[in-house]
Length: 250
Image (cartoon, rainbow, N blue to C red; front, side):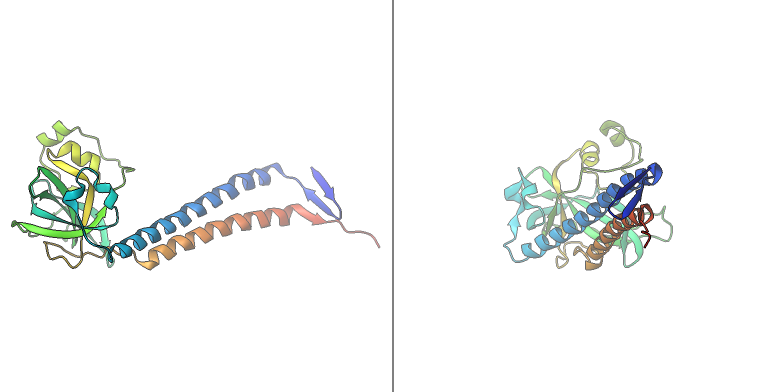
């Protein structure tokens, strides 16, 4: 099928047209996804840096609505309780595999807890072996960045209800920070937020590089421009192979 316009001829091909119709929107969608990821990471970093110049909030004053402190600095007084502590697997620091230590923190004067991410520790030589580490037992006042974990978690782990889980031995290694799962399996009242322990706080912390590396943001932007480039290239190739100039006899 051919169409002519002025001195140009368009050769219509169903297969190549279908490929372009599918691929170009897909490439643009993937590019926008990566671009929005870069924007989100930059926003998180900006909010975190901005919070460093603000007065540290008292978490105890926000127990009914702690999520309003998202990405802000907050302090809380109480003590660690390790019974329902766990290690978050597949965490990398300086190209080394390890874990993040997540420990419940009993808020003084209440029956509520908040999970504290105490930072990164290196894994043992064998991945099946759980590393050992110390946890302070005394009354502490700690501070850190408040973070609301995502509830969009994809996992292939078998779902177990709370009663079944409590009947078993507590899982010391988790693949995801799943707040819904924690609330179902641990018989304690826990807030819907996590505190990422401040790097300067000595309340039982480990390696804590919470700042977003600029390289990660640039990587997302690079991927975004790459997908946009694929979309432009697809259109350019399609037009180049389909549109031809009609030679006129002199």
